[in-house]
Image (cartoon, rainbow, N blue to C red; front, side, top):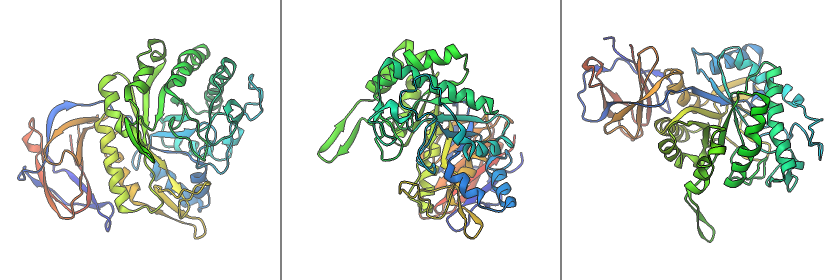
Length: 448
């Protein structure tokens, strides 16, 4: 069998040829396949934010084309499972919804015209490279007049039947408006971060509110409209069974939030999956164990604080492994591109795949660009995670591609080089050993 290809990244040398691993497993530390197989993966993606499109659009046309090709081409980063907001998110240039006319329950003033400025052009760039893109969308805030208090930041949905019906039809109109523009919305996640009461567009939902809205309003509205867009219970930034507070601790219960909804058969029949992000990493395994038939999506990578440091990249590498090993079918990065400093319109500097210096007309690929590339360039849509055991099982993972190739993605988080061996008990010719550099990310691809 041909030797595996090996790509390695360290803080000082990103995306380098690792050479040829030695044949055979000569180290007691590594990964061994167990013979089990996980869920089929959709792939990896990013997010269509206004600030990202603004940054990229400031570059010369040749550089813009380079960026779009590198982000979305199947031969490059292959961002296929992408996200967009329903209305404004916190990386929009300003807050907006699709209908800010108070009391417009008939949605006579509904319009996605604002999205034609940046979001839809951004999506169309991806469509040039991705024929089968998976687009999942969620609102950060309903129209303000549907909320109490009537503001973008903070608040909750007014739970009157008239308001709930109108908000359900708001989602229907969004999906239909995008379809008219040649964009298929694959999934609707009911609310971004249902537990977060923020100073940017947000809306808090209780478990009971979600159960009633999906069961009695959103699900029937999609059904009546003949929509095939999947409804996801997402995006959940929790629940956390215990969190520390200024006065001690707050105790909640996973089952009283998630299972309260999923145990309701009338609500469950409309739900195709669950979307998790941030503190949702602590709940993803429990949902996959109890509801293996439901698709799980990781919907937003954690964003750091604008340093774009190697340490933050190492953490994101772990997050990707964690979600894919615990049932997620896709992993979605947050900001694809930002201007230097990565500052949001409300003051939080965040990381991004690319930093675009609009004054100089140049761009930089950040460490997390290469984190995603270590997975997405080799683990193809339709791949399945393979069960592994061994000393590196907390730092590595393995995947079988549809073409029969096997991909091993592994980190050495230690401050010293370590020997690493891979073994497939069903095929001794696939065994290899390599010395992993200190603080390195590594991708090995074994041909079919």
